[in-house]
Structure formats: structure tokens, C-alpha cells
Length: 206
Image (cartoon, rainbow, N blue to C red; front, side, top):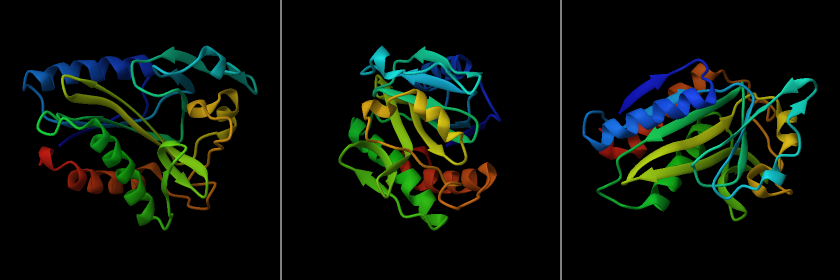
């Protein structure tokens, strides 16, 4: 699996990069790719999102960009301190998008386990949760069985920024982060474990 690292990207720049790589994967000109990045404060609306789920576009004097995106799901937040993992994977041999989503969840569950955090899936929706608090959101899109978008893990984001949305369409879904849970891991430390687990969870890319 090819790894691409960005310290930070504008959201639309990231979407453009994903589109280009997916096109290359479809023509066998690029391998499966994991992009590790973060974004400036941004709200993204998935295909099931309502405009009314964006409650505020400015918090404590800081403007938050809003974009519609083609991924599944509702509205979510991206920002500094949140590691976004975009998984551009050819699943033609499986044709099972639910399995892909489960692998993304497992990627985060296994990574958090390495830091002593017990996390799980929750019947309220896809993603990863710790004691009823959401720590990672999943949203994917698939084109001719090549996936893009992915999963975002809260390491140390400004959690106040989540107050400007109804996260994932659920008003009873408060969020948390690794730092809020007392684990002061760096992005570099988290990325190392993400990469380790990704190579095991996505065997088609080996």
C-alpha cells in the first residue's frame, strides 16, 4: 500500500487529489493508497446531510468552511488535531462496501487499543465510540468498486467546533478525543500504528 502524508490540506485540494488517484487506480496506474492528512476547520455534508445540521459557521471568532461532499453519511467536522485517513482501495475482488467500512472501524479500534483505549462500534451509527462518546467518524464513497474518503480520528481537535453541527445527524452523540481521555499521543505516534494496522487489514494491497 502506498502512503501519502500531508501536514495539512485545504479540503477541496484533498478531494481533488483523491479523485485523481481513484482515476489512476481504476486504470491500474496507481496502487491502493492511504492518505494521512488533516484539514483547517471544516464542516462537510455527506449525501444524507441536511443544511439544518449546520448550526453555526463561526465559533469563538473562528470561521469554519462548509462543503458538500459525495461521501455517504451526514455532517461531520474536520480540523487541526484530527487525523484524517483517506483509504483509496480497489475492492473489486470482494465487492463488499460494508466489509470495507468495518475494516476502517477496525483500523481505529486496533490503533486505540495500542494506546490503552478500549473502543467499540455502536448501534447508533457507523464509526468508533468510547463509553458512548464518538472518537472517530467514517464516511466513504465508491466508484466502480474503488473506495475513497475514509475515517477521521480525534487526537486533539478543538472539540468546541463540534458544537456548530449535529454530528452525524445525531443530537445525542457527544464526541471525545484521545487527549480528552488522557492519552497525549502525537500525530506521528498515532500514524505509526495506523500504518501498521492498515497493512494487515487491507491484504489486497500487500
